[in-house]
Image 1 (cartoon, one colour):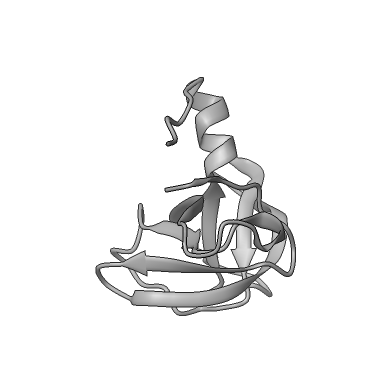
Image 2 (spheres, rainbow, N blue to C red):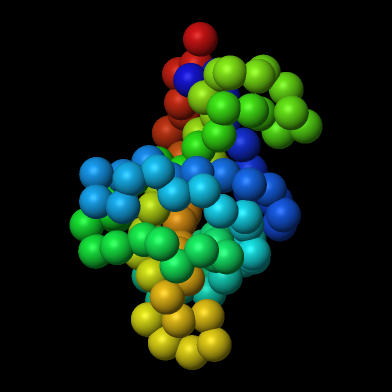
Length: 110
């Protein structure tokens, strides 16, 4: 892994999970309200996520600003789906930057 990145609307990232497999989508919102964590969830345009995907990584092989081609960039960890309302079924994940801040932890990178 080369690094971590903060999410931005319009950026395309992918989830790699044991249940849904590889799912690629574009970021729809970076401050979506989720009852468990507040307005820190990232909402994707896709609904191709399933029960059992929680904890899967969202990542790219290109960094922010298309730097580091071929290196894995960690964006976040899958949380679930929107359960009701106009965005029902949309896939949600939590940014790595939010997770490390709340845990007061740093990621060791090469």
